[in-house]
Image 1 (tube, one colour):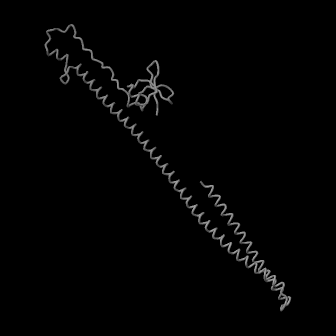
Image 2: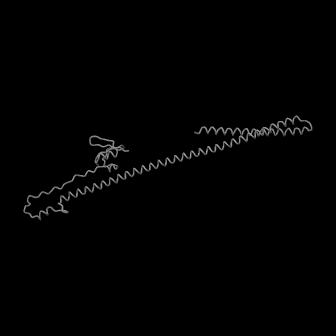
Length: 253
């Protein structure tokens, strides 16, 4: 809020706000200064102070009565005297002028008061409009922040849901992987036993038949080893992915 300083010709006083300044009953010629002004100004030169200025009417200039000339004789008739002192609207000319000046001053004071009141109302309306716009802006900012917070929470919940589903898929694959490993391990052991028997069995077979059987069994053993290695690689990858997801879950507050 702007603060004002006054000067009485010898020293300054203040600071005052508008309400305090209005109580000082300053006039249009009162020196006023506030922060940002290069020099002192009269209150009449500052727009926002117009509605608090005290109106000081100018002094009334009385019309001096015309002294009667010495040569006017007493014996002049009343008709001649009335001609020298004409009346306007039933009033003496001088009295009429005084009344007219007073009426003009009253009307001017009323008009000036109305203008000042209108300026004051316009000033208050502008302040109220500014306050309403500020409140509206604050409400919009608050709504935007709340909306961002809701979106962030929804994204977090969606991410948690996807992570949960992914974990379930990974655990299912790990279980299937383990079952396949057991199955291939069993087949591998059976093939190795067959290879031992095929190598040791020598009756009722030719050398070619024996070598063909041994080669087929060795091919099965190599296939089972390859499948088990693939399963092992897949299991390691799934385990690593699951470990990363668990680490990420602990890092998020």
